[in-house]
Each structure stands twice: as structure tokens, then as C-alpha cells.
Length: 256
Ligand code: FES
Image (tube, rainbow, N blue to C red; front, side):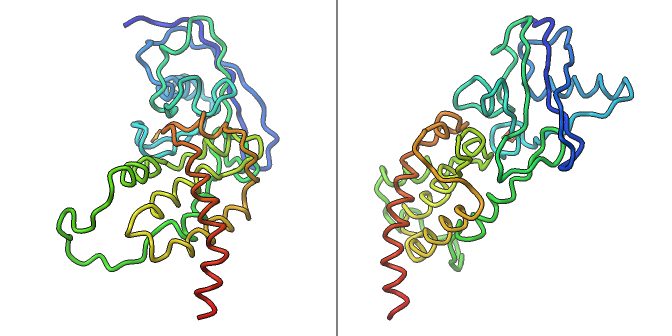
């Protein structure tokens, strides 16, 4: 284990939604290269509290790359410099002594700032509520392999299901679009037999809810690069195909 010295943290402070906000600089004299980025913020907060100052507000929960609550722009990149890694799994060994690290909240119109580094990601919940589920009686546990699913289909569905809903795709997109998130949440259900009954109702509802809150995708691909789970933009193509079909399928089912 070694240590990094003289790390300057230039961090966004904003007391609430009405405050215009500003950057604040703090020096961390010494930190282990094994510390996570969130531990760096913990240490900084302890120093602030000991000095009688207010701690920096930031979201975190599992600290294992599962829950999707951690959400920081680090040096202008969603979740920082390491590809396929959430902020909570980023370690200080990715930085060097003497670095200045700029830390900001997600910047997106759909995610208003609550305080400091915390943003309101409720519009992602609205998309899920509109169709990101299946409606089925659960009953008893079925036998394994009762519904055969080809392995490539199961793999594609599980890859999409890796989405942790952090919103990095929105923050990285120049248009503030949520197509990678919506495509992932829709595809993991629409690919499987269990998702077929509501497939086109789901596609129409989720895309149209997404459009109420977020910008439009123009194929920059920044979302895929920023995604901590490396979800492919293929899910956007699958979503677009299902949305287009939904306009025929749903009309047909209504006219029956
Ligand atoms: S804190 Fe849960 S994914 Fe980072």
C-alpha cells in the first residue's frame, strides 16, 4: 500500500435547488491509494465537521456497484476515469499525488440538484412505473427449465438487466437523453417469454414517458462509454424497433 499526497478537491457546493452554487477547494494531505473515491469524500467530510463546517451531501448506499445511488461527475466524466466502474468502486490508485480532482453532481435538466452532489432522479422511476415490470401471478416456484430460453437470448436479457439505474447515461449524453436506461430496462423484459404479454404496451408507455422528461438520442454513444455496467447501445436499437412495432400492434389490439 502506498499513499498519495497533496490532492486538491475542487468540489461543487449548493445549499439547495434555489442556490446558484459554487466550487470550493480542499486539500487532502495524505490518502491511501487503496481508499475508494467515496472514502476520500468521507475523510473530507470528517475534516469539515471537525472544523465546524457543513458536510458535503452526496448519494451512496451499497458501495459495491449494485444500487446505482452513487453519482458523481469526476473530472468531467460520469463515474470518473475508469471505464465500467461506478464511483463507489473507483479507487485513489487511479489518481496521482498533486492532482486536482473536480467533483460535480450529474448535470442534466431532468435531474434537478437537491443539495451539493445530490440530484433528484425521480424521472427514471416514472419510466419504470409506466411499464418496467411484468404483471403475473407468482404462484409456486416453477420447475427449472420449464420455459426453454435459448442461451444467447438469456445472455442478452441478463446483460440488459445489469443496469443499476444510476443515470450516468443521462449525465454523459449531450442531449440529456435516457435511451440507454430505458432500452436496458425494457429489453431485459421484452427479450424473455415472461415479458411477451405486455411487450408492446410496455414499449409504448416507457418510450412516451421517457420523452416527457428527457432529451432525444442522436447516437453520440457517450451513454455506453459512461455506463458503469458497460451496457451496449444495442438495447436502444431493440427499444426503437419495439416502439415502432407497438404503434401497429397496440392499434390492432384496440380495434378488436
Ligand atoms: S453506492 Fe451503490 S452502486 Fe455505488
